[in-house]
Structures are given as structure tokens and as C-alpha cells.
Image (cartoon, rainbow over all chains, first blue to last red; front, side):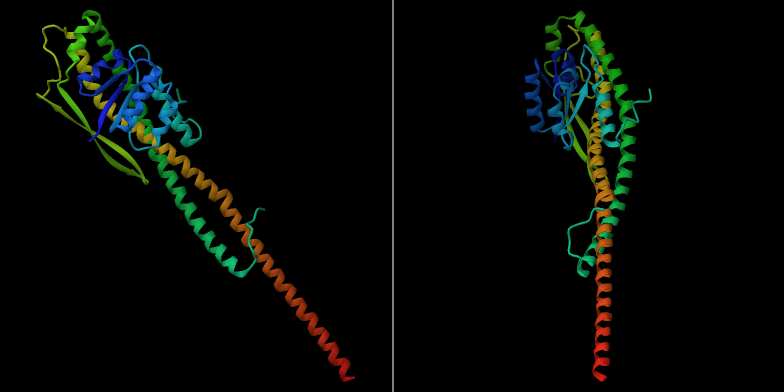
Length: 106
Length: 217
């Protein structure tokens, strides 16, 4: 049995607590990194992280990418949408195919 | 012409021929694996792309509702309204095997106190905006779950495809040509020593015949 965690600034993620997800409000990138590591090792199956933190956590993200769990997924924050989810998919396509054949259409 | 560092013997030749057969078979299998992985991967990525766009749109709408709720209500009111969630979500993780890559399959079970009642607060102190925001988030949560599954699968498959492609290339462009070259080299070497043996025998025979003729004179 696994849990679902949400990491980000409080304003972006407070709503998820009403859905029954465990929220971990953080301020600052170091705190976010700590939380991510703790959650990843602590029985969390999915960890949603707001983009402005995830964009600074490339190493941590790569560490868990090939493992089955946890899935670390970008969600947009209240303020802005950096398009990181798209960028991640684009990177996967480039890694697998050698060049981007999905996202260059538009 | 790159060849392996082996002794040109008949035994080595048999061994190499066996290895070549294995390498060829492995190459074919890995190529099939790569093609199938690629097909599955592209399907997943296309699906994930559409889902990602929809989910972000919905999340944006939910965030906007929250912003409106936040502008009407005091922050403390929202905090205390959300303080004690009524439902609890746990995640079950299954497995789906795509070409020996174990992709997680997520399924949530929600434990709520009452069916369809996810609002963790009385309606007295909060406005309808907060209700809207939370039900919007609730709608998008299923999509987010599916998205997590797809993006995880895409990441794992991408890694596996890259590894498989390296193996296919290593077999196709390094190992198999090396084996073929070495086999050719050994065959030529063996043929050469066979020929030199024959010439030597012919020469010796000539010498013996000449000796006989000399002796019988």
C-alpha cells in the first residue's frame, strides 16, 4: 500500500489535501529536495512536484526515473506553467528515438 | 578488418562459428524487441502528450478557482477549512509487463466518511468558490493518476529502448563483423597451411623419386 505526496509552495498545493493526498508545503529548493528524498524512500508511489521546484531537481529526478517507484510528476504551480511535463516527454522521445518526432509537429 | 586475437586452429574456428550463430540470433531477437518497444513507447507518449495538455488546462482552471476563493476568504479560513481532510487516498501499485520492462499500474482507493462528500468543512464560513475549486481538483485527480502512470512508463521505456538499441548496434556493427572477419582469417590461414603442406609433400616426393633414380643407376 503506497501513498501519494504533493510537494510545492503552499498556495499551489493546499487544495490537494482536501482530496486526501498528503501535502508537503516547502519554501526554498533545499527543503524541497529534502522532502523529495524523504518521500521517495518512505513508501510513496507517486510524488507530484510543482514545476518551479522540479526544474531545479534534475539529479534527483534522474535518480528515480528508471526505478519502478516512485513516479515523480510535474504539476504547474499557481503562478506559472513552465511546460516541464512536455519537456520531459520530449526528452524521453529524444532519448528513445534519437530525435524528436512527436513534439516538433506544431 | 578487425579480428579477434585468437589462434588460427580448427577448434577455434568451430567455437567462433557457434558464437556467430548465437550473435546473429540474438541480434534478430533484440531488433524485434527494440521495434516492439518503440511502437509501445510512441503510443504511450502520444497518449501522455494529450493527457498532459488536458490536465494542465484543468489544473489551471482549478488554481484560478482557488485564487478567487482566496481573494474572497481570509487565508486562515481556507487553512482551517482544509486542515482535516475527510477522505484518505491510498495507492495500489500493480505491474504491467511490456517486453520485460515492468511498468507500474496505479489504482487508488479512497476512504471517505460519506459517499460523494469530500468537503472537509461546514458551509457556514466558506463561499461557493472554494467548493468549486475543490470539486475541480477532484475531477482532475483521476487524470493526474493516469498521467503519472503514462509518464513513468514513458521514462522507463525510453531508458530500455536506448539500452536495447546500443546492444543491437554493438552486435550489428562490432561483434558480428568481428566474428565474420576472424572466421575468414582462420579459414584462410588453415587453407594456407594446407596448401603449404601439400607443396611440401610434393617437394619431398620429388626428392625421394630423384633419390631412387640416382640409386638405381
